[in-house]
Image (cartoon, rainbow, N blue to C red):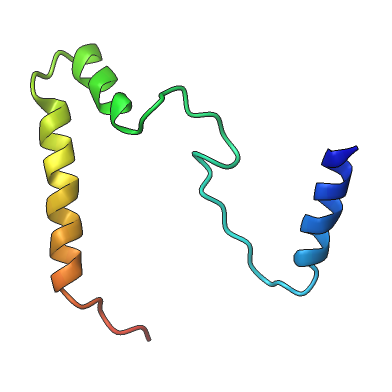
Length: 76
């Protein structure tokens, strides 16, 4: 039972941990798209929004670039 062994390993690693976070879209839930950008294509088609996919990808790139050059606010 490889699954049982893996489960025991995971439980052992988590014994002294206060917080565990998951990327729920890839780890706990099934994503029905091969690539994340396929969702954008689906929304473009579903809502008849030409160029939505390109705009969404560019917006994410812009946000990531902006975040990279803007220091995050101090934690309080």
